[in-house]
Image 1: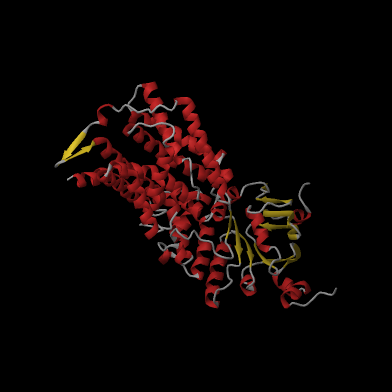
Image 2: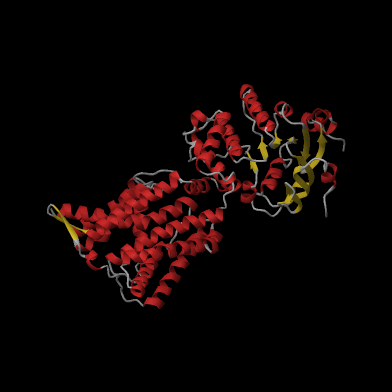
Amino acid sequence: MEWVNAVVQGTLLGGLYALFAAGLSLIFGVMRLVNIAHGDLIVLSAYLGLTTTVALGVHPLLALVLVLPVMALFGYVLQRVLLNQTLGQDILPPLLVTFGLSVIIQNALLETYTADPQKMDAGALETASVSVGPLALGVLPLLTFGIAIVVIAGLQFIFYRTALGRAFRATSDNQEVAQLMGLNKAHIFGLAMALALAVTAIAGVLLGIRTSFDPSIGGARLIFGFEAVIIGGLGNLWGTLIGGILLGVSQTVGAAISPGFQLLAGHITFLVILALRPNGLFPRISG
Amino acid sequence: MGRGPVAALRGAMASILELEGLTKAFGAVTVADGLSYAVSEGEALGVLGPNGAGKTSMFNLVTGTLRPDAGTIRFRGQDITRVSAAQRGRSGIARSFQVPQPFTHMTVFENAMVAATQSAGLRGHAAEELCLEVLEQTELLAQANAPAGSLTLLSRKRLELTRALCARPQLLLLDEIAGGLTEAECQALIATIGDIRSRGISIIWIEHVVHALLSVVERLIVIDFGKMIADGEPHAIMESPQVQEIYLGIEADA
C-alpha cells in the first residue's frame, strides 16, 4: 500500500510540475525562446502572493485575483521591452539575457524579502484531506492537480479554437508570412509571454502554499519544468501534464525507496527517457 | 515633392498604388533602381523580367518586408513607405509567394482563417463564411481539414491564392503563381484570377508563363536590373526589341 500511496501522491505532485512546465512549453512553442528565468518568475509569483496575502489579509488563492493580472502585465512589458530585442537567428542572446534576468530577480527578492524561508498561510486547506479507501489524499494536492488539468485544457482550447491561438501558431510557423497577414509579431509574442506568466502566477501561488520558499529555489523549479516538457514531448501540452506526472511519481517512489533518493530518481527517469526517446514520449511538431 | 510625373500622367484615374523613385541596393547589387509607376484601381498589371531583375524585391518593398533606401510608396493616396508590413497587410495589400509558404502545421481552413481574422479583420461566423466561400472558389474545400504541409504543389499554390483572397485585398500581388503547373491546371488558375479581376480587385502579377499573363492583364511592365525598361499595352510590349532581347537571349550591342 505504501507504493500505491507513493504513486498517487506523485501523480498529484505532477500536476504542480505540469503547471511549472506549461508556461515554459508555451513560450518555447510560440517563439523558440528558452526562458532560463522561468523558475525565478515562479518564485517571484509566490512572493507577490505572500505580500498580497499579508497586506490585504486575504486567502492565498484569493491573492491570485491580483497576482495573476500583475504577472501577465509584467510578462507583456518584459517581452516588448526586453526579450523581443534578443530574438533572432542566434539562439544565444535570449539564453544569456534570461540568465541575467534570473540573477536580477533572485537578488531583488533577496534584497526585498531576505533569505529566510517564507510560507503562505492557507489555513485549513493546508491540512485538509479526504479518505479514498486506505489512502488519505490532501485537498490541496487534489486541487492543484485539478487546476493543472483546467489550465492545460484552457491553453489547448486557446491554441486550437481561437483566433489568438491561430495567431500564436501562425507566427510560430512562419513569422514573415504572419506579419504580411497583419500580425504584429512583437505584440503576439507579448501576449504569449503574458499568458505564460499568468500560468506561472498560478504555479507560484500554489507552490507557496504547498511548501516554504526562499529566493534561491527558482533554479530547481526551472529544472522540474524542463524535465516535464522534455519527457512529455515538445509542443504537446497534454504530454507536458504526463511528463509532470512521470516526474512526480519518480520522485515520490524514489523517496519511498530511500528519502535521499527523491530528486535523483526524478532526474534518472528524465535521463532514461531522453536516452530512449530523445523527442519525448508524445512529440508533436505543432506550434 | 508633390505628385511625380507618373502619377500626374495617370492622374485622371484614381491610383491604388504609386511607386516613386523606389530604390534599394544590397551592397553592389541594386534590386530597385528608381522604380516609378502607378496602378489604377481595378487594373491588372503584368510584370516581366529575367531572373534576378528585382521583381520579387519590388513585391517585398510594396508589402513592407524590405525597406527602400530611397523613394516613396503610396497606397490609396496614403504614403505607406514607413508603415509596418503588418499594418499594410491589414490595410488591403495581400500577396502570394513564388515558393508557397503555407503555415504547414495548421490546416488549410486555419490558414485561411488567419487571413480572414487578422488581415480582413473579420470575426466568428463572418470569417468562417468568407473562408468557406473562397475555399470553394479555389477548389480546396475538400481538403479544408488537411494539414497544409501535406498538400501537393497545385494545392499549395491554390492555398496561396486562398489566403490572399481571405485577406479581402484591394491590391493582390501574385508572384509566379502559374509556374510549375500543367496546362490544364494553369487554365483553371487563369479562370480564377480572371474572376478575381472582375470583382474590381487590382492585381500586379509577376509571371514567366507569358500566355497566362497575357490572357488576364491589360498592361505590362518590364523590369531589368531593378529598372523599368518598358510600360504599355501587353502585345506591343511583347514585340518590343527590349523584351525580344531578354526573352530570346539576344545580346545588346556593346
